[in-house]
Length: 493
Image (cartoon, rainbow, N blue to C red):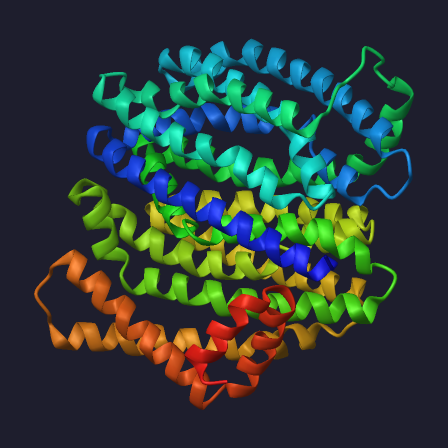
């Protein structure tokens, strides 16, 4: 099977897994959000902030290193990476537990001590899963990875629902994950055949660190900034507002985060195959990006238009404050989605140092925006941070195009039709809904928005942007020959 077909098969497999994960997560969230309050979600989030900040010192970049590794001794480097991962993970876990009491005292809630132990346990098993997951991706065994994970993707949300009805309160958000993660970890190691020996391969750790050090540096700044706005929000506005912000953030990336993760998993495995031919690399990258935009932008546009009915239908009136932040974060999510391959491209060309420089400069701007935005509430932080992110994403685009020896303007020239069509649809449909003054039934409004949007979107591409459809059809056909027939039928190609 060709690399392109393997990539396409992997994309579909990961996409289906992602959709399953998001669907099950959404079902669980509907129950959890109605039985727990914003403060409960904020409490778990602020505990995770501490762990996230500490964990960046460890295994960041390990998967990227293994995927980009091109020498023949792959088996040995995976064994070395396993022990490197174990040692660093235990050091991080110990440091985290030492700081949790201080964090609990600072946040004025002793429950953070118990939450810290649970979250720390989840972290250990999540880190141990990196090695077998990366091994499967490197060998383009995407189907197998998805089949192994699928049962657990279903079990965790169901367990959370059972836990919240059993009266476990805030612990319903994390205990089920802690109980199920060790089983998943064992299943992954058994099915990948990875058998670490007692030899630690310490002499190879320097090689691993040499590749990951710039990724670690970049991620340190990234984590400090990304978690910094949560810390600032909790400090200035309270944990209940943090809970609202988190819910809006998760909902804004409900669909795109999984598609982005899928795309990056596939691209990180496939792009190194084309690294010696920049023109071919660029053509594959931009064609993939167009197809990606064609799929993701409409979902975000529909969510922007129907933000209020979605919040009311899924979570109830007590979460109504999340509507405006959701709309703002949806716009940011659109830019984030189409620039998310930044790391995959930079890692493929071993340009980690350049990506580190961008993140280092970005950090102070992000923190400053968070502080200023906090004076204007949850929507203020979302707006201020979102603006800074979009500005710096353009720097990411410039570096991506430079790596492929292409002009910056070509990126926007390629994607302008997708931005324009969706922006126009948002404006027109929003005006139409406000003028019609329909009865406020959330479910009806969501369905109506979706149906009208899809029909208009298809019509616009069929009449005005048929050339773009031909390019997308070619990409779909190259990766998924069976799906291209249905695509061509819908769009009259």
